[in-house]
Length: 149
Image (cartoon, rainbow, N blue to C red; front, side, top):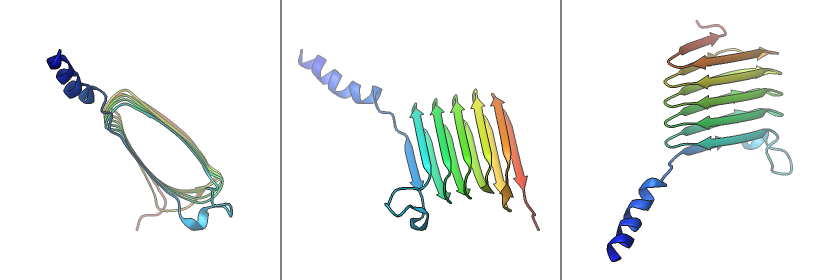
């Protein structure tokens, strides 16, 4: 009986150790007077070894994030106001890096399957941009906008 307890004590933490990270930053200047964020962030993350980093500057943005699977990375650096972002990664080993400067835009990104990469780099301010991207398994997309000297 003691061996059974010892086995359960040692083995149980190995089976329930989901380790995921979340980092969110919003500058003090972009918070409302009540001390609450002027933007909305909804996050659902299931699986192990998922990483999420969000840095957001601006007002009245809605960000919805869903990650299901293992070893997914979502790295967002968002600047602008009145935007609607929705990111979903369903599968394993998916990567999204999104660096956007825009106002009044709507972006939907869905990555299904495994080993997808989506990298977006912005060097200029976009206005009124609507964009929807869906990927299924093994895709790699690099988007660039703005002027690059």
